[in-house]
Image 1 (cartoon, rainbow, N blue to C red):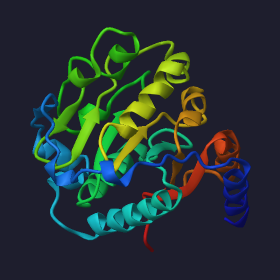
Image 2 (image 1 turned 60 degrees about the vertical axis):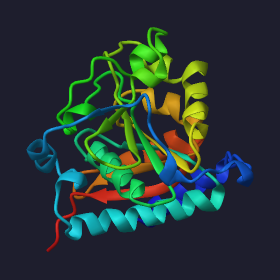
Image 3 (image 1 turned 30 degrees about the vertical axis):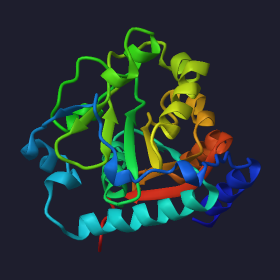
Image 4 (image 1 turned 60 degrees about the horizontal axis):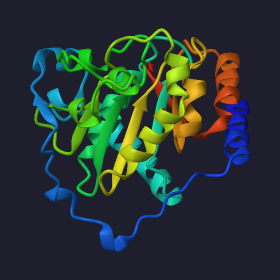
Length: 259
């Protein structure tokens, strides 16, 4: 693991952080925010529980683990004044979407923050499936210029200060769309629409398609999910090199097997 940590440190040092500064006099009370145009859609609790979504589960060690992770991530992001985070994995089925959802929900429980979770997997959008909801439009429709951004945002259930932007219709030219100026402009708009907002992007695996590498220069930082006893070190090192265009916060070890 020492080589992995060295690779992560090299990637961090290769790029200066992209900071934004907000005027403290303009910061409003997060608790007073009302999502007047954002649709509130109830999902299926049993399905969410089956998908290990925190909002549908009782308090347990699993929730505590995400609380620790969210605290560590927020401390790093606050230190550098970062507010946009991409979450990806090295390969498929390593748990990146579940990690992105639960990290976002855990962060949203902080009284000072609001969280927007974006489905950036435009070839195979599936974030909404974890909540058991079926949106008609999403990010791809916005990028094609067909819809207003406010019309695609959804509040899933009764989770306070937590909003999702579903992926929408699958796109074959997803790499080009995610790396477009319009997408980068959207990231900036989403970051600054509300005070103390964190925007999380659930992205495709790094080594499967070029989408994530094309997109991550638009965000402040990234987390890489790896699966215990599955992700190979050589693959992770390759993924870290590809992700060096952004600030890598670190890795999340998922599906750990306790002996």
